[in-house]
Length: 334
Picture 1 (cartoon, one colour):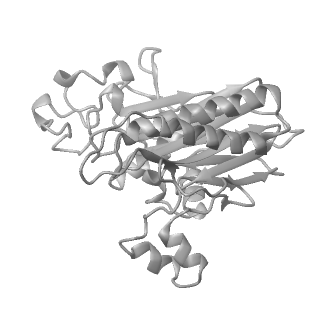
Picture 2 (tube, helix red, strand yellow):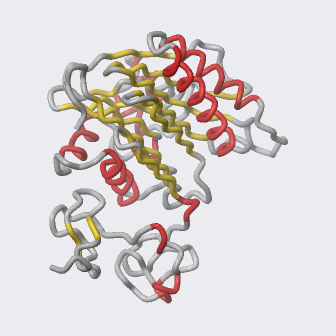
């Protein structure tokens, strides 16, 4: 193969691709065009190569179902040690999730994922304001007081709550005041401090131990915790996704929920909105999806893969996925 023929690479496994390839022969990932080409509607479908007239008014290809994305539909952040993707999904008119991802120093990482509550006014603004406020507090703490990340996480969630309270809004029939959920992580020297309000989740995925770190503040989880229903029964109830804690003007005044862990083996921290975990609810589901990828898969490629899985299964909600590669102290990052 000539150098011009191998200029493309699979975003999941980095295997070489030919210009006309639609799927990676190494891992099977669908090939997509580079971002600079995403707005060229006249070029036809970016997924299967169908002509432009195969693209419907809703932006989806009538032959293969791939949406022809515009830039505001998807945010991607790559910090090497960590990466994240926030995608509008297939059904929502806008992305009401928010992602804050920041690297502090050599190995410090701050992640905040917020999910705007669609029944509220300006949920996208609420989520963005909360994520930025919490992320700023955690970043400052990692720079100046990395030994006090539990206190910093509490302060970050309080700052996020205040930011949501300050979102300008006007009453709308049938809609609540601006509100959102939040899950955050501050990672320093192999120690992870997690905070959350609502049902956005954090998972620890490793070879010997994978588990969900957060416990949803939701109607379904309360039924399970109280022993009133099984997880399957609660999950199938129409009230399952009703959250019992959130950020916003009418939020319960309970203290933020926190967890600190110090993993003893390498692994990946995954933070996500329910746009992902609706399709892969258990830690074992997330682990299976990641384990199916080549061992060399980067954090960004892994976030791509999880997001694409949610899209392939329906993409009914906004999807946000952040992944942080964690090495215990004494092990070098690769």
